[in-house]
Image (cartoon, rainbow, N blue to C red):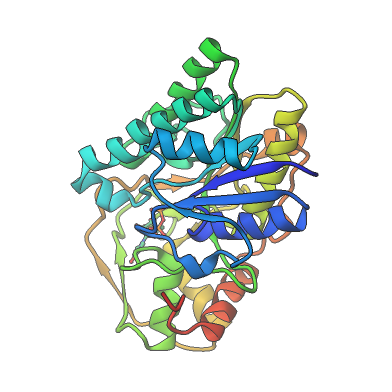
Length: 328
Ligand code: UDP
């Protein structure tokens, strides 16, 4: 596939793995990241890298023209459920206002294809699982709402300008490629926290709530390998080229509880994960499990690493190689 792609947030977790996959697919790539969360060293040095903000219309339209970009993959966003409940205005500003400015810059530069990182968070507390894309969207946290609102911005922008857009609703990204992995500071995601607790680099983990309506009382999530997620972006670019727009869930259709994840982290690492129950975290739905049949049918995408121990194993290996995460 020979195209030129702008990846916003390409220094982040899913963005950096997607950059790797795009390079393998022979795409030309330019990364825009403000490095508020991402890591410069997660992006290969031979990939053009611009440190800047998606809301800077002049900067973005300029680089779209300079690099003759055909399509944008838009990851750059604030993405923590807990934090979003504490900083709603910042989340809407980053994820909706500045995202809309990115669309203005695309329009100014004549770029009309975008793949957007959406989230299972748009569904809120689903009426039933697995969740189809046609399910009601009633987000129960600010983060999920920013993603749903931006999906609507895309739809309206498409009717006004002919933009083609694919929103990928990720369930829970997990795992690592050999060179790129999950390194947030502070870390708030379950799998890296469990593995750090196993490695002894953190004292333990708190399980947020044990009174959910699930078999073991802890929240159920659909963990999806970051390599599979990244491949879905390449499939989405092809679909955009074929004239398609749409919304697709990306998950495995399998749920794992917080306790399942802890047990798997212990099995993979061969070490104990010290943990205790704590109160619920605000904004957490009990169960999020995807039906990704539409992505299989229309994008020709299928997860190649559906096994939770494979994902946690890849994350563990990455952590062994980079015990302190990225150098920067
Ligand atoms: N979780 C937990 N303890 C932690 C971090 C997460 O019990 O220290 C739970 C969280 O409440 C959720 C699940 O693990 O039910 C996955 O959370 P994560 O933050 O990894 O992803 P999210 O579902 O928020 O995207």
